Every structure is written in C-alpha cells, then in structure tokens.
Image (cartoon, rainbow, N blue to C red):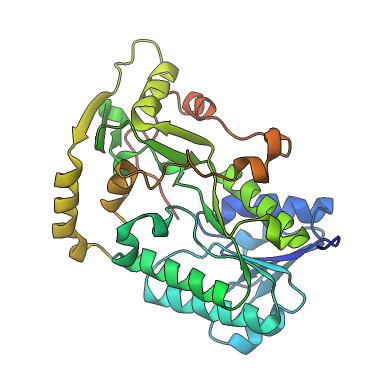
Length: 324
C-alpha cells in the first residue's frame, strides 16, 4: 500500500493515441493528482507537438532510444510508465523491448504496455499474427520481470471504428460486417481510454493487488446491428437507413488465410471484422469499468448516443481517418 502520489512517464505522447491521452495526464499533474509527469520523445522539447503539453509538474525529455543506460538514468524516480508507441514493425518492437529493459533497470514498479485494442490471448490468431504475437511476448516478459503490468484492452477506438476500413460506408448508407452482427463489440472513446489508464495506474500505485493485470474497458458494448440503429436514429430526417450486408464467418476466415501473407506484419487489416464476429471485442463477461470508475463518479463515460449525435448519424462520410 502506498499513500504517496506517483511520478508517471509517458512514451508516444504525440502519436494518434498519445495526443488524445496525454492531456488527461498533464491535467492530473497540474492539479496535483499525480506527483509529476515526464514526457519522453525522440524529438527536442521545443518541438511544437510537445510544447502543447508543457505546464506545471510536466517535464519534457528528449531521449535516446538506442541506449538502455541513458533511458534508465532518465527513468530514475519514476513509479509508472505508460507506453503508447505505435506498432510499425520490427524497429518499434526493438524500441519497446529496450524500454522494458530500461524501466526494469530503473526500478519502475508499474508498466502499461501498448496493448490498447484487442485481447490477443482471447484469439488463436494471437499465436500467428506478428503484432499480436509480439504483444503477448512483451507482456509476458514484463510480468516475468516482476513489474506490475496493466494491459488495457479497450476493444475498438470509438472515433475510428465506424469507417470504410471497418465496413461502414456512410456515403452510400451501407454497413458490411462478418457474421450476423449480433455479437457485442466494445468501443472506447479516446478520452475514456485516457481516464481508464490513469485510474488503473493510480489504483495500482496505491495497492498493486487491487488491480488485475488485464483490464477490459469500454464506452459502449453494443452489437453491430445496434450501432447501426443508433446511428440511423441520429441521422438527419429523410436519411435512408443503413443497408446491412453480412458475410459468412467461415468464408471471411478462408479469405484472410489467402491474404494474410501479403498484409504488412504491423497491421490487422481484414482480421478485425473476424475478431469482432468471434466475440474477441465483447466485454460483456469481464470488464473493469466499475473498478476504475465506480458508478461513473470519477468522470462521465461517453455514450454511443453522444457520439452518434456528434457525427450526425453518419461517421466518416466520404473520408477515411488519418493517423498523421
């Protein structure tokens, strides 16, 4: 048990996930919820993408992702590390393994690896997909080192889960998915991911045994058919409802086996709809929402209805998300 406030370090603060998560942590540092925040980047602290996070109790550090010793020195005094570095292939895996070695050397007690998304243990593809295989091994290595390791599994990111990449074509009012669309699929807003992560770190710092190593969280856990219905309800009057197109699971899996050798190893691509159909994103049976945000008392979780109204019932109409 600890009554002190943690010093937290963030990696990947300027990426797609990081730039949405980091403001929640900087606010916690400025309000005194945590002792201080260190933001690590390969860029100089003067970079505009980092300067937006500057403030009281926030330190921005340029680091060398080739030197374990230098990184370990910079991590001295840090209680928890949150990694939001992306998965761009072998080089990103090397950097994450180096980070793990450095935080072990520095005596960091809590580690949130860049797990965000699917639970790789819940699918047999976790043993064959390169990215999921790395995530599994990296997490196991962290646990074996005796570090309190918190895997945050948030299903899909709400803000990008309903676009053409995932079968939803708002411009043509079609929604194509694998299976019959009656299996719940967890989606979590980026802001909620940030709050769930901060809450998990704070609880683990206070009492590591009070927090499980694996945390399933969500903002919404509806079926794909229900998501379509909610979006239709929020669309402008006169908008035709989504036309649902279903694809047999067995056929989708067979097609994936043909394509998977041509898919970049750091991408899940057509595997995502299969995982959704198989229930890998279903948080019905096990979730940490109440543990991390009891009764919604810490922050208001975003509802899917709110999101549907924000996008006027037709997300990503004619465009695709950008991660730049």
